[in-house]
Length: 342
Image (cartoon, rainbow, N blue to C red; front, side, top):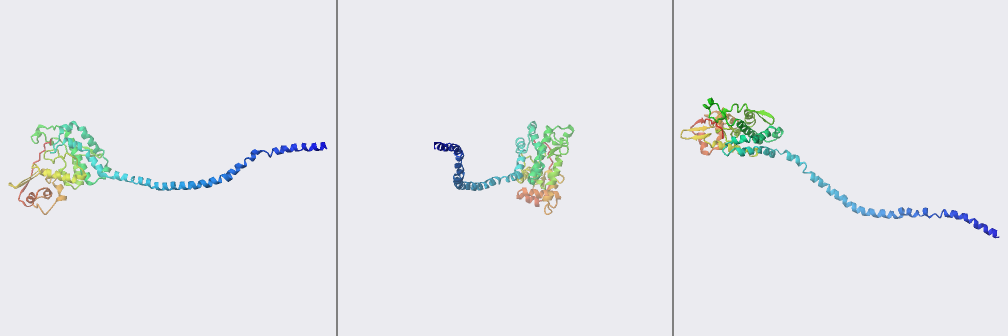
């Protein structure tokens, strides 16, 4: 019996080895890991969405409020081209480049310090270079007033340039019998031979005057603004002409011109009215016909003279106007003084 009892205990020993296989706790311990994603992760997923949902809604609303702000910032950007298209400030800036020359070398009477200007001619050359290279497309966008101011300034500065090229004026003895030594008539070809460039186009003073001051614009007051560098000339203004105040400047020039007895005078004792030679029909007189011509007054005069008289009555006092319109007088033209305006 002892042998029989001893056998069974030998059989369970091999059974212990299979027990060791299932006893391996390590793979069994993975079960709680499977429980974590199933049981523990589900509650965190359901709880956080509640918080982000409340936190994310305001940010979504804030961008919608911020979006119009960049639109408001961009609204002024279309105004930039509008600022560039404003030509009047550009015109004023360009006209102002002439100010230094006219302020420094021309006095209130229109007399010019040619001696000093010739010594500092580089200042004048710099300004004339601006006229030379000026963009025609900018000029074309200007109103007529600024265009007229542009050509008056160009004419006057080019005249100064021609004079300093010939200063001091040299005269031949034979011509001194006809003209005084300082007469600009000694400068040969002053109007039709000296060439210059404006907006990359070649001109002479005569060509500039004809193309723009006579034909382009119907504004005869410009002939009281351009300077002929002589004592009987309209006085050279010691400031540039500007389109924005051109009407006032031209009226002032007319009044200043008529205020001098060397250009306009009424002699009631001799019953003579003296007019500047510049206002003759063969000079600038006929330029007044289209705007100031009349058949109702001054019927004894030629059409150009009637137009001139009709024009100047706008700048005289009523007593002189009445005499011009109804008085018995003879009209004479004053001799022109070509001596240099210095």
